[in-house]
Amino acid sequence: MNVTPRDYQDAIDVQCARNLSAVVDSLQSVLERIELDARSHDLSMDAVNTHPIVVLYADKIANLSRMHGAEISNAYDACKEHAAPVRKAIVTSDLGKKPKIETVAAYLPSNYSVSWVENELVISGVDDHGWTLDGYVIPRLGSALIVAVEVKS
Image 1: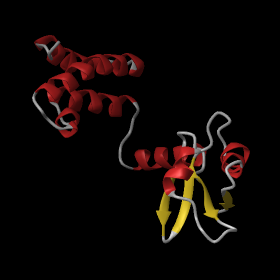
Image 2: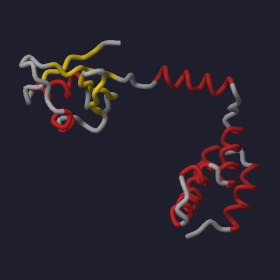
Image 3: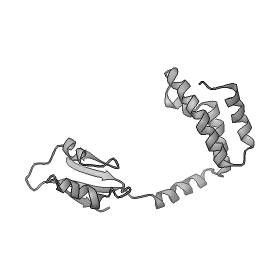
Image 4: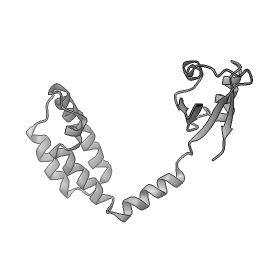
């Protein structure tokens, strides 16, 4: 279903809303149609993000959450303080030969990844629902005789 004239009117009407949850729910509903329209016309995600309906909803959400300049920075800092820290480990080898990146990646849960950083294989990610660096990732790699050592920041 395409974006309708009603969707445009709803974006105008929502400017009087006082319930953030209802505004977000309404945006989610119309956003699906905007994304479908964009895909059918080979438009980028930027076209979705800057669509007039999305802009009006985003402005109302910012207004209801009283977010302006410094408040956004303060909110970012507060979220950063409460977010789970990124944990890292370096893959080492007692045999003098490091495993392939694909081999290490095969042993990692989806909340962890591996990449080359300055000639080192580095595992990084955020602990999630028991999939932890020290309780799962490092022991799992050890089961394949791959040694990883956590790097403390």
